[in-house]
Image (tube, rainbow, N blue to C red; front, side):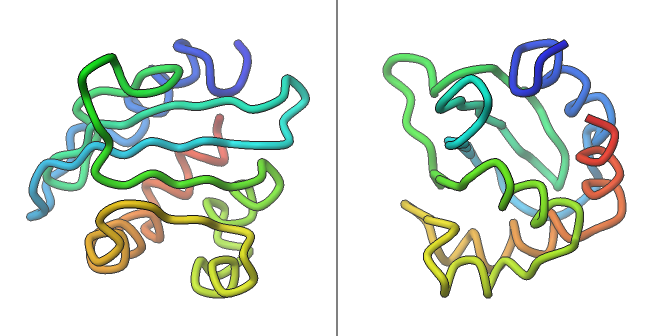
Length: 124
C-alpha cells in the first residue's frame, strides 16, 4: 500500500471512524507536495468529526472542496504526528489554506489535534 492511494485512504477512514462530534459536513482536499512520487492528493468528506468518505486524488468533477490544504510531505508528517504547530507552519508559509479558513481554524485544527487522528496518521 502506497501512502495517499485508495487503500491508504480506506485505512485512514477506518482508523478515524465515523465520529461523534458536532461539526457540520465539510469537504477537505489535501495536496501533498515533495513526495517520492511527486505531488499527490487525497480528499476527505467529514461529518461530526469523522470521515464519511476518503478518496485518492482530487475532488470528483463538479465538486469543490470547502478547504484546500497544500503542504509538503515532511510538514504534514510533523503536523499530524503533533510534532509541529499548525499555526507555526502556516505563519512560515509551509502550510497553505484556501477556502473556508475560519472553519479550518475553528473545526479542523482541534479535530486533527486529537489522539484518534494522531494515531491514525502514525499508523499509515
